[in-house]
Length: 323
Image (cartoon, rainbow, N blue to C red; front, side, top):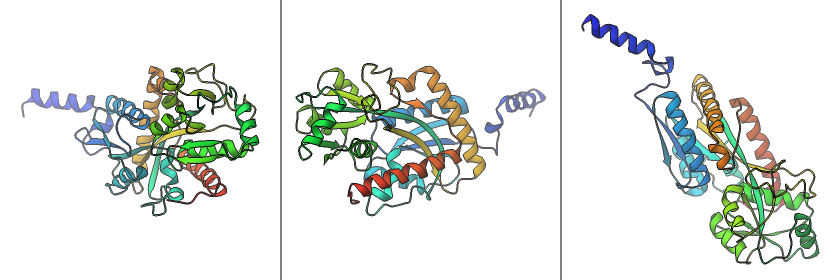
């Protein structure tokens, strides 16, 4: 190699961040794969793609989002669990991931022991909507009616163990009412039946139900966050509406195979936290109704343990049986 080429190569190497140099993680010629265990186009997928694009810009390596839907999220989860524990394959999923053992009678893995928590990315409030044919305008009216006719109030459940399910159970518990739960395969069919008056109410991610609420096809009653949302400033919180201790949110996180080296987990956590900050600055998370979260892997692990304990108790007390 000529002196000129040698100097040019050295200059290029020195200009590369430490992570991109040969033998370090992640290497520029490797690909970071983010597995989403749901179909393209949904809230989880949209959030994952925002994160993937920001990581591509930060790290200077190829990042792909790989959708592996099915099995209540376990097909994608199993694909990550079986991947090499080298930090190049990650799972991006929602809160439903951590309750697989409580919801499925034959869960293919234990979410708490078979994966390494990397980072929690964000959380999103849910919105309570009711059929537009119903006369109630406030949550207090809904709860009063449900107490008077406990056998006639139905709640749509888009997926067992999902935030929509757990939030409905929590509202029933803290609001001192009883709902009859009607299972669905997804948010869309549940919303259609609420809009048509076949089911009374639905709690689901605000970004999913807000368009129909604005169109008058369902009636917005309350949101589950502690403060009102800028996306729907006229909709009160559940707390404002009289259930003083109520607060609930869906959330999104990133996991790696369980034996991924701690140093790589730490690197990915720092990179993801930085990416979340940049996405938040751009306003892209806000448009999805997501509030950014940055935590250490250990904080995320503790959060998961608390969330699983709460979810398991709600499911048990409701008489839910794993499917």
